[in-house]
Length: 221
Image 1: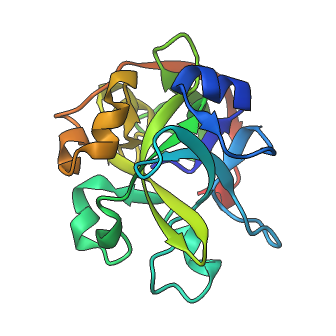
Image 2: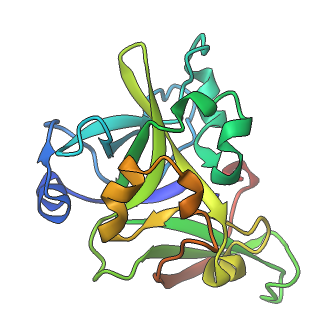
């Protein structure tokens, strides 16, 4: 899955890397942004590029709100959209052809270890990893879908079965976000067959950074 991203990117980087205008003035970039809402937190903004306006980056709110949402509490359940099941879920089926690029500098995953550091036995010790596209550590795009709810652009990050690298890292659920190669941005925005981007049909080269092992609170999962 994908619940934590590296959102440390600037408007200047977004304009240069994605060749778009930035239709926002303020964006609080964060090295580790969680999609989960702490008590009293409402918005989880990230820059996105939508299919309706592919020349401009705007701010979207993480957690897609479908038309039937009565309030924003539903967002914690729609941070990710399983790409293999988009047509099966009421929350997503009306957004299948509402595509967006979610702009990040990386994403994070914890590899489960036992107390002896064994990845084959899931335990409370977690090895934190930062993962990014093999593109010189520049910002890149994750595949997303979106919906406009009460004039707010809300989105979900699409996930797929893990490739070999991510299956070893995300060794409990074996999922990963759909990471897009640069030359496939417009294809994702314009191609109605979203399963073209499901692994193993679609794959990308990723770079893995091992961060310090840590005992992670259960509240993060």
